[in-house]
Structures are given as structure tokens and as C-alpha cells.
Length: 216
Ligand code: ADP
Image (cartoon, rainbow, N blue to C red):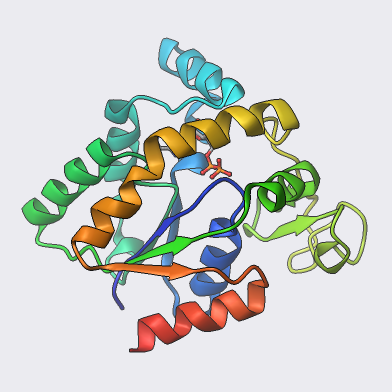
């Protein structure tokens, strides 16, 4: 199975689609946000620095992000193919990643751009709850996405958590960062002729479209 890279604004559904793909195709799901949230718990200068970036909605340095990512990509579960959720986040990261792929003789795979309006992204952020155990995503503000039981994961019954940076203020900063740094990546991949765009906001329909791309 080829690798998949998701490019999208915050709360566009990268995590949800990654989770569905992981389950069905046995791909490793690598979220740089998750890697960084874990590293932010370290009691060190690096941990403090990452914690600060996350709480302000700013990108963590390319150097630290790449170090954590390449360490993770060397683990054995990635051999079967993996999904990159939240990386690359700017053109510099994309170029560094392309050179890592060259060195390790791996393939970039599919680049999928999940395009959603800002207003919807903001609404999704406010009510978002995720399962730290299995990665499933719910939303207590959107009827069709509510968990069956308040605060409990439908899939593994683990307690759901809310991310500290899922609030209106940090959302605006994250969205501005996206427009400034990540959006230019769309042209980067479009010019390489490997960009697939999904405009569908329904999660099942978006998943069907992704499956169509990977089966073509
Ligand atoms: P979202 O896409 O909803 O913003 P993520 O979990 O992907 O959520 O990212 C959360 C935060 O982690 C970002 O706001 C940023 O501070 C940091 N981050 C994630 N991926 C990267 C990356 N590739 N480079 C730098 N910082 C990152």
C-alpha cells in the first residue's frame, strides 16, 4: 500500500479520515500533532518550547518536527505504508521530506488536500473530542458526530479528551498559520501533478472519494 499525505486546514478531517484508513488498510497513522503533544510532556527545555508553540497555535521548528517524525518513520509498522497527518506543514518541510524519501528509497505516495470552509473548521474545533486510546474523533456540538454516551469513545469505551488548543483564540492563530505556511504547499504538490482535492464535508462520502483515489 502506498503512503498517504494529508494537507488540510485545522479540523478538516485529517484525523478522522486517517483513523478510517488505518482501520481498513492497516496503515500506520502518524500525526505530527500527536508526536509533538507527547514530546511537550517532557520536562526539558525542548518540552517547554513545544508546549509554548502548541498553546499559541504556532508551528514547532522544522528541525524538532523532522527529528521526531523520522524517528517514528523508522519504526517497523511503517514498512507496510503510513498516513502522514499534519506533515509537511510548509514548503521547507516538504523539501526536507522529499530528500529523506530519496535517501531511504521510499515513495511519497498520494497527496490528498481536504478542502473545507473556515467557518466549518471553527465549528468543528469548538466541540471536538478525541479518543487518546484509538484515535477516533467525535464532536459534542454536531448532532451526527456526538458519541453515543457523553465523553466516552463509541469504539473502545475509553474516556474522550479535549485538546487544550481547541478554542476560538488558538483556532484563529492556527488558521492564519495554515494560510501563511501550509496553503503554499497546495501549489507545490499541484505543480508536481500529484495533488488530489476533496471538497466533500461528509465523512463517509469523503472516505469513499479517498478510496477511489487509492484504488485508481
Ligand atoms: P490541527 O491540524 O487541527 O491544527 P494538529 O494536531 O495537526 O492539529 O497540530 C497541532 C499543533 O501541533 C499545531 O498547531 C502546531 O503547533 C503543531 N504541529 C503539528 N504538525 C506540525 C508540523 N508538521 N510542523 C510544525 N508544527 C506542527
